[in-house]
Length: 381
Image 1 (cartoon, rainbow, N blue to C red):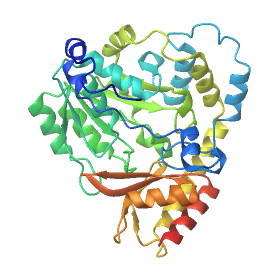
Image 2 (image 1 turned 60 degrees about the horizontal axis):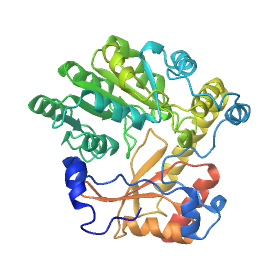
Image 3 (image 1 turned 180 degrees about the vertical axis):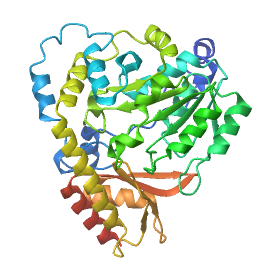
Image 4 (image 1 turned 30 degrees about the vertical axis):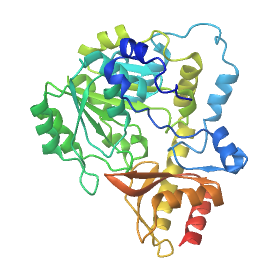
């Protein structure tokens, strides 16, 4: 989007735009297929898109059938997403009364902050991690206190507890598995934070939990009704390949649900999104197949990346559908990304921030995708 000329509307900006918004840096999204196709000069089907942790197997066939026969697209959706929340209760073991569905989990992050943060209130974040927590805090006029992870991306639990107490934090964000490295936070560490901060909301983002080796023992979503300070976020973007339809959900303590319902947009989840999510949950066999295929391919990809024939990448263990690699041997992460995109039509993510100076992240794809990227990386060695 083109920026206004310098000086244009300065008086109106000063009068109308909230001060903290004037310095807000926009979130940097991943480019869609259409833009990538034009930029790379390749057809969309020729591009291997491994830069956004999307599910390469696509939506379950039952979803496409359900959307094709959707009868009420001309009617406003159910503002309480009752059918989907009932299905989620069966799937998660968390009562529907504690579940809220959003236009992606991103909406729920923003909604929670609008509910509890006054301007200047604090959240605790544990970077490197999902950047939407800090972004939404900035949007809502809050203050982010960072407790950096260690070199192996493990959370400094004592540091988190100390920072939350010293700053009167209202929310602590924890991510398990964490994005961008795929590490799981031990249950005992999560419990320590919950028990030490009874007056602070602890948000556990489980966007990638289905890809854990035994995710039913990792997830904490069914425990939410019994804990007054635990919130768990989940999504259909990864597991069910509904990233383009934008549907996520969260489990919230009973005491805050009244206020979350009161302030959310009434028709925030479209008829198409609810229809697709319900159909996906009904197709348990397909979801299990895709999950197992991605976990298997993750292990094959990480094994290939550790090979002597790709000496410039050092991959980290992952319990998600992506693998983070440190770029070594004098190579530049941005250069690796650019070469793969230009010469091979393969898209990956790169990082060049102070906490992650020379890293790339590779989403897990199909076996054909794994073959292509491993071959391409070997040619770059």
